Length: 126
Image (cartoon, rainbow, N blue to C red):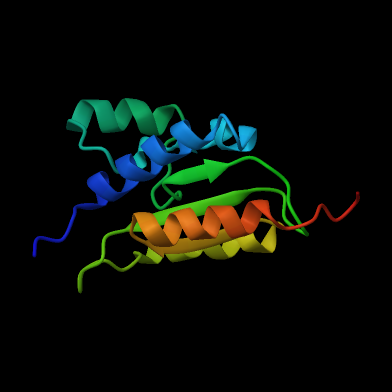
């Protein structure tokens, strides 16, 4: 069995979110941060000048739920090599300290469940 790539897993999650946004409108706010995209050296330099930062999570859902301001997801493929880098762990920790839910999800199914569970949390100030 061939393990899907991180790209395939994340693309599947975005397709699912787009389809489900008719019944779960908050999913229309889910977006990707293309920090990990392959870029030429000149493009990397330009993006860094514009604020690109290493380790920022792959996906952001800017919806408040429970005690959290937003949900951040670092996508990883299900493989022995699929672990967050030092920079990614740092971002997840800092985002959590700021009142966000910031997690690593291994694959589409885990990320989908994380999002659905997050959206079911009651608003803290409702």
